[in-house]
Image (cartoon, rainbow, N blue to C red; front, side, top):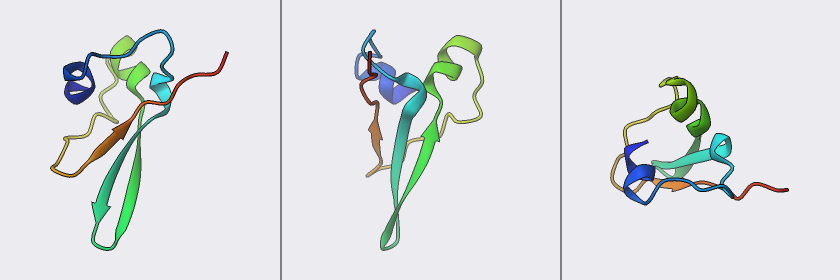
Length: 64
C-alpha cells in the first residue's frame, strides 16, 4: 500500500483489485495477489505485503 501511494496512488482507470507483487525467489519469480481495493476501501490488510528490494508491483488498467 505504501509503495503504491508513494507513486501517486490509483486513478479511475486502475484495476486495483488485480494488483500483483512479483518477487524473485532464487531462480524463479513468485506472484502475490494484492487486493488493493479491499485494503483501501475495507481496511483488509491480509494481502498488504512488505516490499523488499527488487520487488515489482503492477496495477493493471481496468477494462470498460
